Length: 180
Image (cartoon, rainbow, N blue to C red; front, top):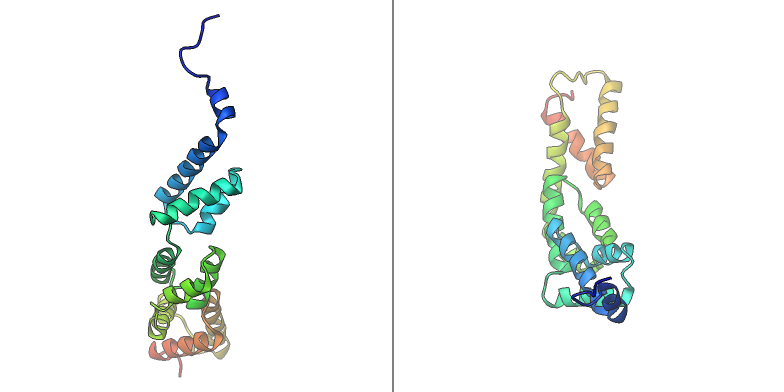
């Protein structure tokens, strides 16, 4: 039929696939970073999911680290600030989340150092106080024990140590005047 006016895109990809894979990888990483901050491991997993060869993914991720668009230590600090305020998670839960995201222990501990034991206790206290309902009749010991277990379990799911959870629940219930 008619001659094409430019280079055939399929032959360009076949002849020079590395730069094309890199541009695809860069586009994936940029799209991920515009949605939300991500750790290097999260981005690496996304690239693997999109069948980007490992050597191409590593090269692209290395370059993004060089220009400081990927910074796991800063990501960890931001993650801890955000999740401790919004979800009131304890340090142990945050530590697990950071590990799942590929943050090395040293960077995770540095990020967690932002939270004091006082911050953690205050967050636990706030959680328990928010769950208290006016009219909760806790004069019956079995009812009081049931609510104590439920509140302590809620704190445990958020990563608080059992001893801290039961202590905070007891203090909050005592302050609310529900214990005799």
